[in-house]
Image 1 (cartoon, one colour):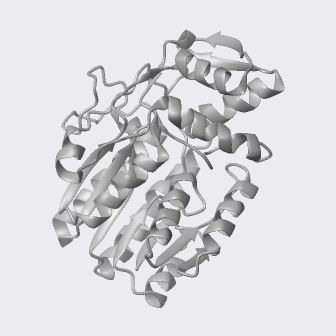
Image 2: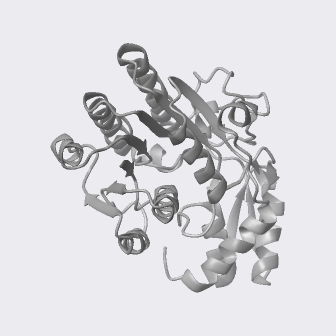
Length: 317
């Protein structure tokens, strides 16, 4: 039985759904906070609850007793911790949300995984840990001790905490640095969602760094493939990039959205924001070698898939 935290979230929902379809027994755990539209989160959980092999607990990672109860009531063999406070910009104004969820909550599930001798602990890190790294593509061999947001610092802290548990207690841990994940059922605070909504409503969109930003957009099904591979292989202590290895310029990204919507965006070109980096690109050689990870979905197909979903679900967010 696998425990997946953050199952009301974007990536957690897709991982849980794929695992349930494959016949796995899944325990889901999520606080369902109001960081974004709870109706979207509740709809994801409603879909997961339609599977008889899904068992859901609504609670906070920071509630140690509630989390311990999950381990006591279920025979958990592997843990995938995707629950976290997300967002670089949000961390500039709400720092304590990151202290609670990403540090205290992470330590709770790490410690309970150790106490219950789970076979493998896989957790979400982020490409944000690379900070203002000038070298491209970003490699897991690069130094990542200069974060430029509290969110990134919290994710780097997770990697250090996991490493400590692997070293002290021989607990297998794998950290996954996600690169700009997108797709159906995505987060309303992400660029794709924000741009689509604004373009349809005839409102201007803010494009930072005057459109010269590049992002390694990674489709959610490719991310799920990488997570599943990490769960199957009990690496003693690893960190992997899960990206597409094909950075896309923001203006081309917007063009694809315009094409799918049949409507031109009103573009508000702005300087780069604090905490942002001009370009992200994942070096995935290590992931290919040890996870057999090969992203398959192009940005063109991925945006088309999202738009097909969004046209039916634009009421969320």
